[in-house]
Length: 388
Image 1 (cartoon, rainbow, N blue to C red):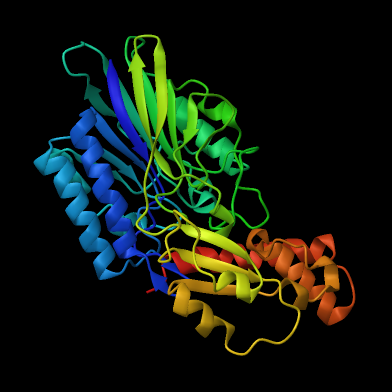
Image 2 (image 1 turned 120 degrees about the vertical axis):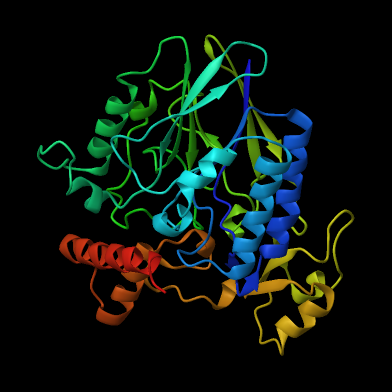
C-alpha cells in the first residue's frame, strides 16, 4: 500500500485584516510535521499557493525552509510541491534541479514534457508516478504550443492536452497521481481565493482528471471532492476569511492499493486562534466568551445595536483583543441590492463593482461593461503576481 499526505494553499506570509498570520501558520505546520512522523507517508504532496505573494516576506521564506528541511532532510520523506496562482513560478522553482536530489521536487512552470516523480511504497512492491501540473498563466501557455499546432482555445483544452501527453506512456501496473492547482467547475469557491479569472473562464472540467487514481488539487480553500471521490481539494492551511468560519481545516491522508484509491481521510488541524463571527448587542458581546471559547480568537462582530456607539472597537478589544472587524447591519446601505441581510463576507469583486456602478450612475452594468471590468481585473491580478 502507498500512503500520501495531501495539503495545499498554505499562503505563507498572509495578512488577515492587517495582522500577520506567520506564527499561526507555524503552529499548524508543526502539527503537519508531527503527522508526518506518526504516519510515515511515502510522500507529501503540496498543491500550490505556497506563499501568499509572488515576492514573499522573509519570515515566510524562513518558515518554508524550516518545514521542508524537517520533512525531507530530517524525516527523509519526499515532497512534491507545485506553484499556485499566488506564487512566482521562477522564485519558487529556484534550485529545483539541485533540490530534487535531496527528495524535494518543485515544479514552477506547466510544460508538456514534465517528467513524473516515481514513488516506491515501503515493502509492498507498489509504485506511483506523481504528475505535477502547476498553475500557469493560461494565456501565456496557450499562446506557445510546443508542437507547432494552433493554440488551445481555453485553459481546459490546454491542460487536457498536457495530461494526455503525460499519460501516454504511463505503466499500467503503477498508480497515477497528479498534483494540480485549478478551479474545477461545480466545486464550491470561497471569498478568500484570488480568482483565476474574474470572468470565470478559467474553470476546468473534472473529467480532465478522471484517468488519475488520485488528483491532489489546490486553489479552493474548502476541503471537498470535485466530480468524484478520486478528485480532492485538501483546502487551505487556515481560515483566511470570516466566510470560512464554519469550516474545519485539514490535510488529506491518502492510501492507495493496486486497484487505486483505497481511502482518503481528512485529518483536522487545530489552529492557535480560531476565526469566528459573533453577533449580538454590545452589552451581549462585552459579557465575554462562552464556555470553551477562546478570547484570543480572530473575531468579526456583528453589532445589532441601532443607535450610535462611542469607540465600539476599543470596548470590544478590552474583552477580545483580536477583534478585527465590526459590522453594523442596521447601518448598511440598501442600494443596489446590498441590504442588511447581505452576507458581505461572500461578496465578490464583480458584485461590489456592479453595486458601485449602480450607485454612481443609476444604471445597471451591461454585459459588455462587465466583460471589460473582468478583463482589466484579470490583467491587474496577473501583473500583481510578479510585482516587486
